[in-house]
Length: 92
Image (cartoon, rainbow, N blue to C red):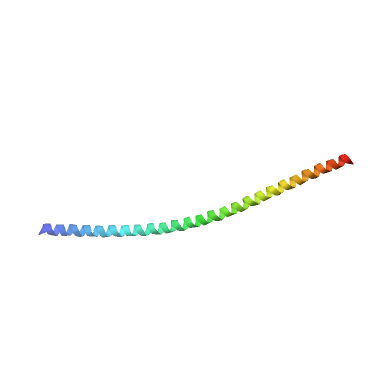
């Protein structure tokens, strides 16, 4: 009879241990889910930031290209003006 009681007590202890481990794993799972949600939110925010910055970079590249074109055009106009003024002076 003592063997059966000892076996019952050991089985009850294992049952309590399993329940405690199950609660521990449930808390861990809840924490991991919360962290995954937070990571997803941060990843989405970073993706939005990258997209916004990419648009700004592309806009700035276009503006820079236009400024360089305008500068080249102005430079060409100045050179033509200088050449024409020199040519005109030679005829005068």
